[in-house]
Amino acid sequence: MSKEQALSDKKIQAIRGMNDLLPDQSPYWQYFEAQVQTLMQRYGYAEVRMPIVEQTALFARSIGEVTDIVEKEMYTFDDRNGDSLTLRPEGTASCVRAAMQHGLLHNQTQRLWYQGPMFRHERPQKGRYRQFHQVGVETFGLEGPDIDAELILLSARLWKQLGLLEHVTLELNSLGSLEARAAYRDTLVAYFEQHLDLLDEDSRRRLTSNPLRILDSKNPDMAAMLDAAPQLMDHLDAESREHFEALTATLDAAGIGYVINPRLVRGLDYYSRTVFEWTTSALGSQGTVCAGGRYDGLVEQLGGKPTPAVGFAMGIERLILLLETLDLVPDEATPSLDLYLLGMDAAASREALLLGETLREALPALRVQVHCGGGSFKSQIKKADKSGARLALLLGENELAEGSVTVKFLRDEREQCSLPRDGLAAALSELLNVA
Ligand code: ATP
Ligand code: MG
Picture (cartoon, rainbow, N blue to C red):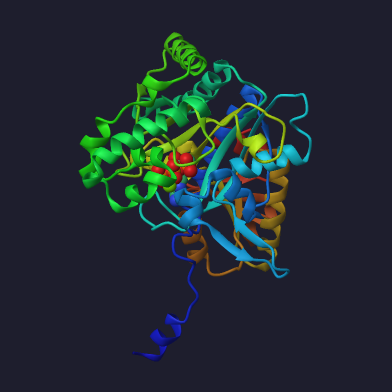
């Protein structure tokens, strides 16, 4: 091994499954985030930001002890004073905690949203990371199917805005009330016990702890048996059935297509009644881009007053991957420079820096980069070209003396020209069509 290689091997790398977001990608994120922000404003949802670290008990008590997340995916560590803390694996529990702690649930309804990183120790692969990002929406104090429908309409509008609507499918199910689910659970366990030989190890373990989750198994050897299992839909309590029918009627009226998936149970314990996922076939096996549902029992479970709630979370990485795969990121999402300013010597370079400020002052929409760091004319022009700018503005001894700039057209076959510094902003605004 060469000395150089030995040195580079020692370079510290990012943690597996935790990604850097580099300049070639950040415009996509900014585009997506801007779309989300305006969408939330259009629906009257308010943003909240929670810490990324919480007490471990919050997640154990809300998500459920016998879930993939709590059993094996959490980043849990002891704080220096011995408290057990966890990097949040999802946002709902934190959002409920914050809303309760600050009295947002007292005799009022809330429509909240957040975005940010989540952490799960999963096997990294395309569309699955250990630090990933979600946009989450949570509503509190609303028990009717109208708000379930609104959440779905809101997400559908986002797909429409992004050009994704025809590439995603809405899957719906109802988990019914706690009581209905408990009765169904017994029916389901009895069915699974007749097919013990077909259950894989994970599922056998879940048979006593969380049998509904077996329905969620992706094991192809179990698929036929699971398809033939008794369905929760047939065991719903009357109120949950009514709720579900009102939701589907609203979606029908709004022209939102959906598929009822009786095996959709979601991986977290806190759901009741409506659950839904938006999926795509364009991303391989990591096809769920948005998932949510009703969790009427969670606030009480965490020590608050009974409060109906419904929400969803979408995975930003998967959505951006989808936009890229389908080539749906508009060119405007990656803004390019209008101008690159450069000076031939130290005095002209300082002038270029000042001219940049003058132009930005006059033309707020103008995108200007001023060359820094000196260098030969040739190397500066190369940088100008590489910057993607449409025009290069050159300042040299002559230009300073006569109060002009030389304009080079970097993207058009067009002779360079000279423009007076007086009235330059107006002339550029016309040339570039920017205000
Ligand atoms: P999956 O079935 O893909 O494991 P999940 O049911 O664990 O998803 P949720 O907890 O419902 O996912 O999270 C909502 C969304 O967040 C998912 O639909 C997905 O888009 C995204 N997501 C979840 N886990 C990851 C991850 N490890 N990496 C990237 N995105 C993720
Ligand atoms: Mg998961």
